[in-house]
Amino acid sequence: MTVPLPFALDVAGFCTHPGRVTRPDASWRSLRFPALFGVIEHPRAGVVLVDTGYAPRFIAATARWPARLYRSLTPVTLPPGETAVDRLAARGIRADDVRTIVVTHFHGDHIAGLRDFPRARIVFTASAWAAVADLRGLAAVRKAYLPALLPDDFSSRADVLDDAGGLRPLPPQVAPFGRGIDVLGDGTLWGVPLPGHAAGQLGVYFHAASAGPTLIAADAAWHSHSIRAPHDLHVLARLLSPDHRAWRATLDALHELAKGDAVRVVPLHCAEVAAGVGWVARGGPHPPTPSPKSGGGGGSLAVE
Ligand SMILES: [Zn+2]
Image 1 (cartoon, rainbow, N blue to C red):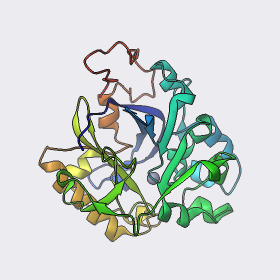
Image 2 (image 1 turned 45 degrees about the horizontal axis):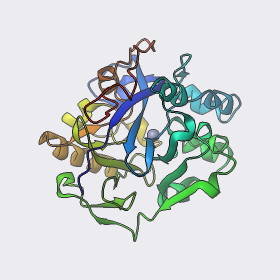
Image 3 (image 1 turned 180 degrees about the horizontal axis):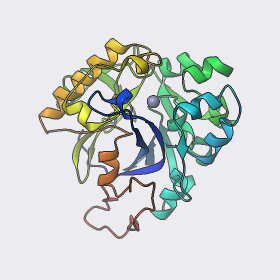
C-alpha cells in the first residue's frame, strides 16, 4: 500500500574521523559526520523516529575506559540544542508524541537518544539484538555498543522483528533488495536488511510525502558519493565490520537502486544529505525550523 508519509531529516550531533577510512578518494584529513535521524508521521502509528543520533549521555557513557576508546576513535561534538528531543521540540513535537523508534542497529550514535522518549516502543531486528545483548566492557565497545544507553524499561518496550523467518517480498520499487519486514503491518513502512556494517542492520523504505519513495540506508554507506561510486571497505574499517564482503554487496545493491533515480537513498552520516536539510558543517547553529502545523499541503514537515 502506498501512503505518502510526512517526513523530515534532522541532525543530533556529529563525530569526526579520517576521511580516507570512509572513502578511497578522500585525504586522511578529519571529516565531520553528522548523526542524522528520520522523523516520519504515520496516520495511525503517530510519530515514528528512525534512530536518535547523539545525546549528552553518550558523552557520559564514554567517559571511562574501555568505553572511552569509542569516543577516541570518533570524537563527538554535540552543540547545545542539537539532540533529537530538542530538535523535535523545535518542530512542535513532544517527546511523548514519539510512539515508535526504529533502531537501524545498536551503534551508540544511533541509540543515544532512546531514553528521551519514554512512550516509544523500540523496534529492531532479532539478529541486531542477538549480536550485542550479552556484551559488556571491551567486547561491547568493539561492537560500538554501550549498554548504558538503553532505557531501564527497554525489554518491556522492545518490539523485535524476525529478520530470519519473518521476511516477505518487498515492494518492487526496492529491487534489487528482494525481501524485508512489514514494520507496522500495513505495508507503509518496510524494513530492508542491509548486512555488512553491523549485525542485523535494517534500512527503512517508505513513500515520503514530499520526496517520494525513500530508503533510509542507515550506515550501509557513510557518503552518498559512495553509493554513486561504490568501493571496497577500507582495511581499517574492516576491523570493526562483521562482514566486509556483505558490506560491498549491500553498497552495490544501493548503487543499483539509486541509479534509477526512482528511490531516494539516504545514508545517515552523509554531510551532503545533512547540508540539504540545513545542517552547517561547523556544527550549527540550525536555521529556524518551520512549525509542522504551518506547512499546509498535507502537513508535511517539509525540510527535506
Ligand atoms: Zn553504525
